[in-house]
Length: 230
Image (tube, rainbow, N blue to C red; front, top):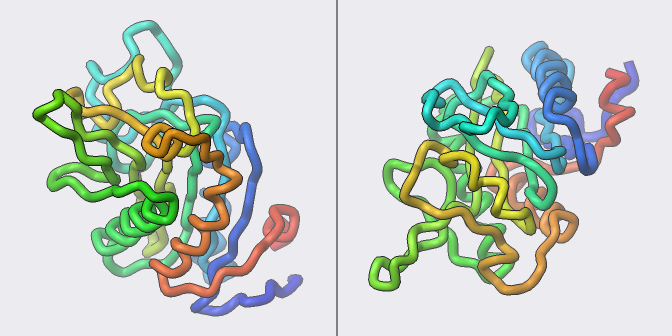
């Protein structure tokens, strides 16, 4: 087996999968990497990508939250509820060994909060809600706006799924659903909050750096073809 540089307990392999990635393809790769990581055959690994447009439903999705127009939805094995992924949204799937999944979810939120700050956007947690938010203003009738979401699965001590951060995506994709089961909130993006277009390609290296910092890992780049040789 060909060795991977940095294949140690403190390493984080960064695998960039590109754009327009079909959800099922990335989900299948996640499961494969998860099996390898759980067996100790891979270091902690994060898959970074932009999906082709897709709605996914976590285990807590209620029937009324699904699109009423027959739009297809992929049912997945993560926690959380219904959401959208697609162009203009950075998606990160860290497949890492953890002992405390609640603390780990907070680290993913910390990652997004820090990335938002790097681009001049103030994001925060909201009690009782997952993800990160831009604060609303009740006096102006402006709701809290979700900038990033978290959805996880933990199996054999190793995580799957991860977080999605809105960068320059079209917000109308969320109009068909109740994002994360929350009817009285909005959805926003780094571009909408700053008034300038901030694309995933610009955000990606910052997100990789902040994620590695939050996890206490040393990142290194790993090409997909090298990953699959394992």
